[in-house]
Length: 90
Image (cartoon, rainbow, N blue to C red; front, side, top):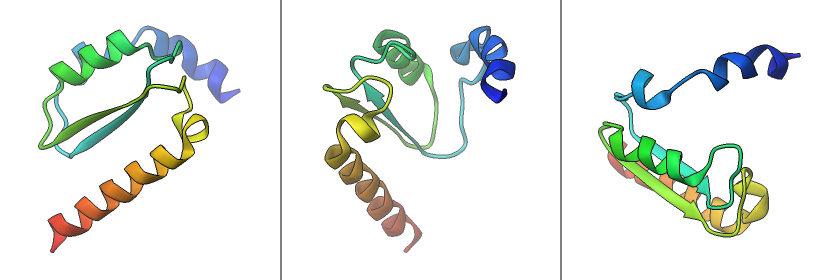
């Protein structure tokens, strides 16, 4: 029910226009084979986004769920982000 309610609104949302700046660091995990959020628009959004720090990590053998398609690489990314966050706080 939630998906049915949100998909029409999401389909009409242009993140490049509506979300050009974040005040927090961002890490994007992007599957190269993603058909839901394709690579080209994801790259364009990343390129135009302003954030204190930003990182785009490509999962070459993944579609929309890199956490399942490439779990070891995804885990390593999460551990890396966690480690960097802990260093930033110190």
